[in-house]
Every structure is written in C-alpha cells, then in structure tokens.
Length: 478
Image (cartoon, rainbow, N blue to C red):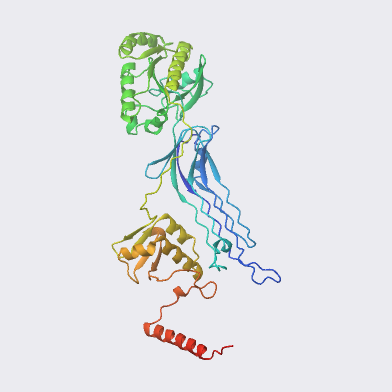
C-alpha cells in the first residue's frame, strides 16, 4: 500500500455565490413597502495551507476531488444569505503548486503559508440593493457567480538542510538512522529505500534536518531507476553529502566512478552547482573497505572535497561528520537573506484599459471577453426580461456597444460574451436609449419585444398625437 506520495493532481472547485432575492415588503396598511430582497452569500474559497504536521500528499492521492461549500441565497426582509465556508487543504512544507501546463503558481514554504487555489463566486445582489431613484422597485435580482474550478498539480520538494546522495545500498539509510532518530527500512539489496527519509541531527549547538534521497543511478535524470521521481527533493537542501560505498561487491564499481556518475546526474538535473559538498567513505568497518578508503582519499582531497571515513555499523567517524555538517549548515543559514515582511504589489491598470476586448472571429461572430462582462452574464437571469434589460444597460455603460460599432458590427450580427465553451450568444440589435428604469410593467422590458414594421410605428405615433389633440380640445379652463 502506498504510504508516501509527493505528486498529485488535484481537482478543485470553489463554492458558488448564492442568488439574490427579489422580494417586496408586505405589511398591513403598507401596500407600497418597497423592495426588501437580500443579497446572496459568497461562495467558499479553496486554500492550500502549509501544515508542519503533514508530510505527504497521500490524502489527496486517494481523494483528489475537493469542493468548497456554496453561499446561501438571500431572503426577503433584507436578510442576506450566509457565506460558504472556505475549504482549507493542509499541505507539507515545500509544496509547489503548478497548473496543467507545468507553470508554477505558488511555492509554499514555511508554516502557515497559504495560497488561494480557487476563489469562490460572489453572491448576487438582491432587488433592495438594485433599487435606485429611477428604479424604485426592481422586479429581479442577480444570480450568484459560479466559483472557480480547475485542476492543479501539487509537487512536494522536501525541505531539509542536508541531502544524502549516492548509489543504492551505499549506506545512506544506515547513516541517517544512527545520526538521527529516524528509522528507515534497511536491507542488503538495492532500492530498499523507496521514499525520502527525514531525520533531525544535532551537531554541537546546531540542529538541522537530513534527507536520504533514494534511487540515484546513472541515467536518473532521464527517468532511469527512481532518480527522476526523487531528484527534486534535493533542490531545497543547502549541503550535499556523497555517500560512497567502499565495500561494494560489484566489480565494475569503485568510489571514484560512483562519485563521477552521481555528479553527472546532478549536473544534468541542474541548479545544484553552488551547493557545498562533503564525501563520506562508508562501511570502513569492512577490512577491504578500510583499505579502499585509504587508497581513494588522496584523490578525493585533490579534487577539493572534504573527506570523512565512517561506519554506521561501528559508529565510527559520526561525531566529526555531524560537526562538519553543522558548520556548513550554519554558514548556509547565515548567508541567506533575511526574510522580508510581506509586500503588497500594486499593479495599476493602464489608462486606456477598457476592461474588455471585442474581437471579430473568422466566422463573423463578434466575441466579447473581459472580467466584468463575463461576470455580469453569469449573474443574469435570462428568464426575466427586466434582468436582461439591466444587463444591456450595464454593457452599454461599460462601452461594449460602442466598441461593437467600431469593430463593424451591424444589426443582426452574432455576438458572444465569454469563452467558446461557456459563452452566451445573441443577435445584436443596437439600442438608442438604454435604461431598465424605462419599463412598462415590472419584470418586462420593451426592448425585447419583436420590432414593429416602420409603417406600423408611424401609424402608432400618429395615433398617439391624435389622441393627445383630442384631450387638449376637450380641456375647459377654470
């Protein structure tokens, strides 16, 4: 059964906003109580938060679909709906959030660091909030905005000070088991360690963490063995320790060739050239291992490495090694820049940014894209003519109609608002006057009526003038 997972694909959905309420106050002896519909509640966000008690992404491997709760709809009596609860997903320290294309969205390091992976939808306004001096009793309310949905990839990069690298069965797990309280699986066959092991080591007054990175063999950076899967756990480490097996039974291997092979893989992976390195000649408790260590030590020191001879079985050379590692870790920590206070980055919009774009596509369709137009469309109840008229007013005030004219749109042309997979398409009819306050009965908008022929419109206007003249003729002064 899988116990350690360091990469998962998470399917997340934020909560939808609650719908606004269209209601009229009703009370005895108050026939015109006015609108009192409340606003809908905000949908819950999906947040990723670093939790030091979490060390694996196993929970999300088994349950990759996560959804926040929706906001509640508004009610009459100016009662707003309850906001949806945020969904907080704890992740290990060192989790990287990526999109499906591999672009980094967030790098979560440090207890309590959070990232809003999906934002909840806004609640719709009730008709009480939509009332104005000229629209005293709106017969509609806005719908709640849908919450954001999508897929994100979570990758865990172990946060440790020291990384032990080397061939399988070089003794890395044995070293970390005697230097710390960690109890990794240890056996006399390759690839015993299938997951990174973490241990806490004390060297003098310095306490640091050590990680055992498994599965490094020639070709690891191209996916051979387990190296490609776990090489990313080396990225955050400050110090690299080459653990070389001086008692290997393979005739085609020796400590120098092992070192060259692992260094080649680290260089191929990239980004690790500036990390200080130590060499541990392990298993010197074996007679042949001690002799081989003494033989290769001068060559390693000639290359500029600090070399330590150690034995996890006999507990030889461990104190000197821990103090040397503590010295390098302390120097690396001192060289790191001090963490700055949280900065707020302000990115003002350009002066000529209209907030939307109008583009004519090859099939002649005019597509409108922008945060506001798309949100307004999602919040419109298209079964209510008055709500559709209100949407037309908002788009007109934003300048969408003017841009359509500039783009060459004519009466009857198709206009789509939103992306191809979720767009509202309609036949455009330019309006001369706009205003949902210019309505007849509540819930209706005369602009949505079928257009009358020109001759009929002239006859109707003449009939209105004749009716006005007759009323004037019958007027008697006091």
